[in-house]
Image (cartoon, rainbow, N blue to C red; front, side, top):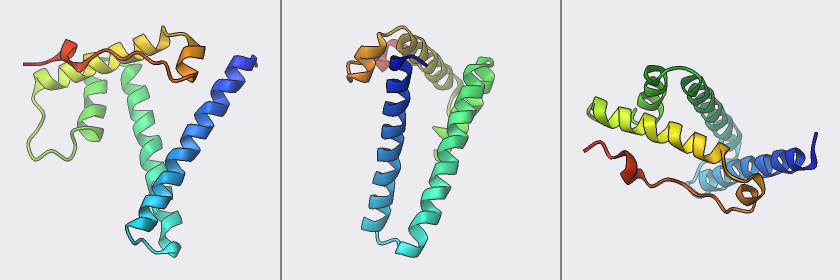
Length: 125
């Protein structure tokens, strides 16, 4: 593997480790007992990987599949169902961001110089 690919893998792992270390610390600060923290972090990891898989599946399929993943994972806690124009706008936004990220310079991204499109470009109103 190239040095760039190895650097990207190392950065990805470091971000993952930082995220789950932070979850561990926050659970402890919330008063979760030491004996339960590991179990809760494992549940969070399963949820994370499930969401990653759902989004990957949705991105590799049509907007209906991506919409289903968004409904479950982004809008799932809403009291009312998300309206179709908003769901379509979010699916378009996600697809656009993935394409935009794929087209950015790898070194710039790894240095934290990432350009995201503003959500107003995908406003459903």
